[in-house]
Image (cartoon, rainbow, N blue to C red):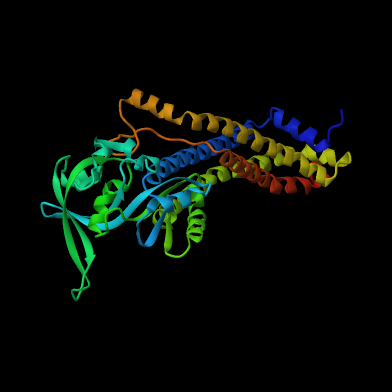
Length: 414
C-alpha cells in the first residue's frame, strides 16, 4: 500500500520509543496540556451557556418580549391583540400597562417598575405564576389595589402578605413644576422570586387598577403585551405589527430594556473563551519545544534521508506530521472528556457537595441551586478547530529548521 514518505516516517517517529526519555516526557505533557485546555474550554463555555439560558428563561419570561402601545388609550384591546396574532411569530397577546413609581413603607422608599396585568391571562405570556413563593396571582382583584412584589423588595421592607404600603406615582398637573406626586395605598397579596434583579425592581398589580391610577376610562388599557415564538425577532415582528395597524401605535421590545444585560453576558463569554485559549496556546508552545528537541535528536536520521534523496519539503512534512499527531490526539482526548464533563457537570457538583458536606450553590445566596450546563455543537467545533490550528502552526518553525539541516554538517560528528 502506497504511503507518502513524510506521513510514514512522521507517524513512526510518533510511535517510536526515543532514546531521550526527556523528549518523550515533553511530548506527553504537550498532549496532556492540550487535552486539559480543550476540556476546560468546553466545560466553562457550556456552564456559561447554561447560565445564559437560565437567565434568559427567567428574565425574558417576566418582561414583555414585545409590547404594542397606543398613542391614546385603547378602548378595544382585543382588536389589537387579534391583529397581532395574525403574525405567525405571535403566540399570545394580553392587556398590559406599565408605569414607574416609588414604594414607601415606614419611612423607607424604593423605586419600582409597575406592570398592570390580567391575572387570568398573564400565564399565557409570563412565568410569574410558577415563581410565586407567597400568595397566588389570582389574588390580584380589580378595585382592591393588591400588589405582588419581588422577594428582595419584601425582604428589604420586611413585608409579608397582608401588609399595606404606599405607592407614589408621578402625575401631570397644571402646577408650575408640571408634575405632582400621587399616593395610592396598596396591599401586598403575593411575593414572587425569579432569582434576578427583577426581584427588587418589579411589582405587579391588576391592569384595571393600573388604568385607574393612570386615570383612564373603565375598560381602557394602555397597550398589549406579546409573547413571541422567536424572541430574537422581537424588533422586526413588533415593527411589522405596528406598520400593519397604522398610525397611532408604537412598539417596544425586550432589547430596549434588557439588551445591554445580554450583550454584557455575550461579551463575558467571549473574553473568558479567549483567556482559556491561552491554556491551549501554552500547550502549543510545548509542541514547538518538543519538535525542536526531536529535530536535534534526529539530526543524523535527517542527514541520511537527505542523502537518500529526500527533499526539504518531505523532511519538513515529517515533523509537521509528528507535531500534528500530538495536537490531534490531545484535542480529541480533551474534546471527549470535555463533552462527558459538560453533560454531567450538575451531577458532578452534587457529588462534590455530598462528599464535602458543603453546598456549592446555596439557594439562599444564588438564584439557582444547581450548576446549569448547555453543550453547543458550535462551541465544541470552534474549540477543536482553534486547538487544531494552534497545533498545526506550532509545527511550522521546527519543521522549517529540520528542512534546513545540511547532511554534511549533521554527519560530521556521527
